[in-house]
Length: 399
Ligand code: GAF
Image (cartoon, rainbow, N blue to C red; front, side):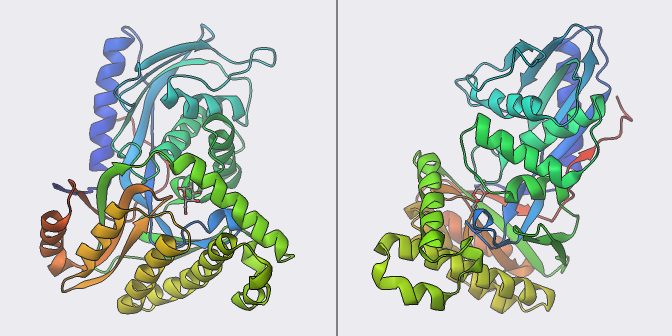
């Protein structure tokens, strides 16, 4: 377990230089004139609420996916990535899609996110282009490596074929790419925060109205510590859609448009007639939305004790009612909480592996990481992070 301080900007610059070098080697004679970056995210609280039109409280990370490249006039899209699974080829070429020749998902898997974005991009006509992709968002680590790739790709296309600049539509298009090309019926959180992220702020996002309330997170005495369990259980994909259907079934049984509109009183009144599992799923969502509202308030007023308590309640609800945690994540949370100066800890993201997020006093971070390292049976990786900006075009100086 190694601690990596997320230095906003620094990581992105280094990645862009690496991508530029690769570009020059792969496409000799061409000049990479566009460079963009889009961040991964960590969700502080509000898990599995986004597709129930509820509230979430994520922040964008200093870790990003960058795309560096240029237009070409040959009608071909040429891609090279350094961010793929070890068993996949890292290069791919295909013609610019047309009405009669659309793109379809397939292999390599990493390219599906890119192809989905190109296929659903909101402006036409697209030209060919050549691009290199690099990322320091841990792949499949529950920190939205896929959303950061989608949003980076979209941001790149905006540079070579401008759209109307509507940021909400941008996030929604990236979500649609994930639905149709990666077969994950995700909510809007990951793509939205990767587009809208704000330096020094977590964002309270209302996934019904898409209204955003930035909450400052700059207290030097407070650290957001991410711990990667470095495990990923394969059921995450299919289980995700099962949860989503169960929530929809619960909303329907309650006669509500979504679980956002339901109260615990509504749910209790119907408990006897509901499937026991569906009841527990709905209970998680309804209580989690309430916790998220309260947590945002606690963060605004600097009540970290209260915020941390809500984080732990969120974890227990995800573990016991929503069944999306796993032994490794539970262990990490227990180890994190068992010491001085720790306000709260919970699994973050979809679950079944990936990361936990811990809110801890700056003076207690070293000890907390050591304790987790000592107790965790696997190998943990740590990231000390700060809320960072959403997707951006990088300055070309140095290119
Ligand atoms: C995944 C999804 F992509 C998000 O939309 C969200 O539902 C999250 O799981 C759980 O909160 O990251």
